[in-house]
Length: 319
Image 1 (cartoon, one colour):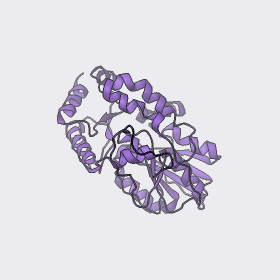
Image 2 (image 1 turned 90 degrees about the horizontal axis):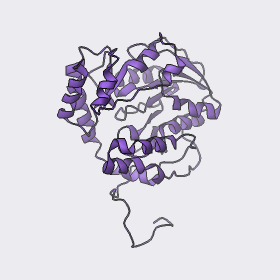
Image 3 (image 1 turned 120 degrees about the vertical axis):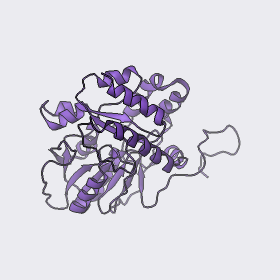
Image 4 (image 1 turned 30 degrees about the horizontal axis):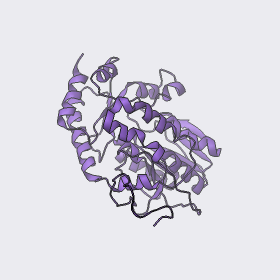
């Protein structure tokens, strides 16, 4: 029993009693801090990172003074050029984009071993490939306020303070009562609260919430929705999406239809830009700029069924 626990009185949020504790994992407070943990534990001094990447990935690199260079990404989302790594302090960040790059990610792990850092923030269901450190962001797949999951053979020999998550919880419960648009400002605020956080252990709240999730059912629903869209949209998708995906984040639809996002929003189908910072880093003629501008991540998650997917297809095909 925790020192602040009491017996009796009012109830807490009902989450179930099972605590998320996957065997062999280091449970941290965010995916970006999983990267920070890898850099510290592995003594990494330099990282090759893709120019097609979320800007928050630079936070731990800058905070820790780790040098980095950008590498180019090809139109098929693979590394454009062969990269030669030096000693063990040199690392390569490999991103499993949209959870549809499982086979390629595994091949990079085999090629580079422990020097490959596998960013599976968008690929929760990809199995870790040790000795390559592999990290995940559960909040991109489930209704939790924060958290990062790391598999690594190199551990820090220190006890981490435990994070506290209740203040980042508002958007999750407000959306249930009032809807997504009413809770959007809360989501932005809660999301921004993760900036600059030190490396900490995953909070009790997040572990309890994840412990309450049936993780296989969401995976199967995601896959069903993914295949529904793929079968109907692949002929017009400029991205050659592999049909083999264990549990994708979304259906990445590459289109130069300038009005597609507006049509989707007008029908209350929200597809974010991954990632707007890329268009600041790159020239408009760069492949990465075009990927960030033109890939529309169509939602396929476990909240939705075939009827929702049919609506998405209708909006995409409408001109």
